[in-house]
Image (cartoon, rainbow, N blue to C red; front, side, top):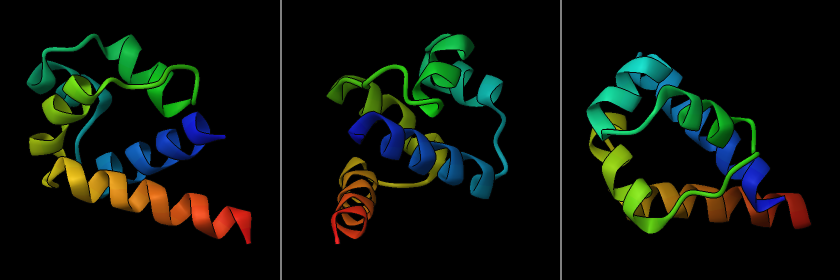
Amino acid sequence: MLEKIFGQVLKNLRENTGVTQEILALNSELDRTYISLLERGLRTPTIATLFKMAPTLKKMPSEIIAIVEQKLNEDRV
């Protein structure tokens, strides 16, 4: 469940920022296919990955975690 919600949050943030998976991957020094796997909830990011992606998403890592936490809590209600 966590992976799916993180993936949804990541995709929403990326799209709202107007960035493609490819640009996010390049700026974060990650592989584009890894970004795709994250967005589909098939992989769980490390904290290092979160810190690499955050600047391109124009968010602090803690903000991303807070959004994921909020979505998790909404789903539990």
